[in-house]
Image (cartoon, helix red, strand yellow):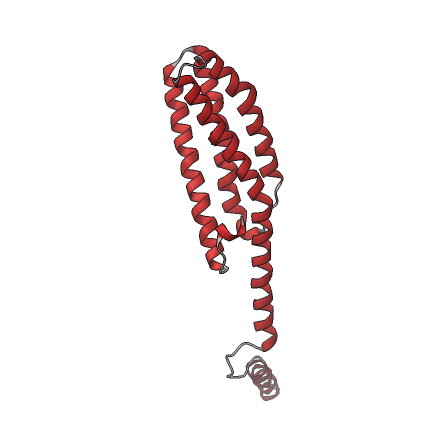
Length: 183
């Protein structure tokens, strides 16, 4: 009985060991290579689609937070508008524009590989929004410390903008693309 039991155990182990063995050929099959290539192509197309979705919004951001804000600041410096008018223009124009842009960006559903990068863009817009709100509050209260706080927020937003741009460039290069050709 013991010999039969021992034989069954040894036979079972032999089947397991030899049955689980594979060939010594370590090259991936053509099917696996094709799937990997198809995945790369799909990821590249997803990236292109994301860039097409986000580029118009980024252009709007450059216009509203960039050019419009700089124009208002310059008008204030030149004495064409006073501080109260600057605060009113920011509060009634730039802040609502920023809310709309943030909503647009948050509605984009990026591919999984781009989610962290996309979050940088969302955070950048949020920092710009906080800064604009802080500027309006500073002007309303006549509180210079709030202007310092707003400048700090704008500095953080610029850093997030750079981080987003660098990551997008790196991803594009990984796919053999140039962002400047895609915009």
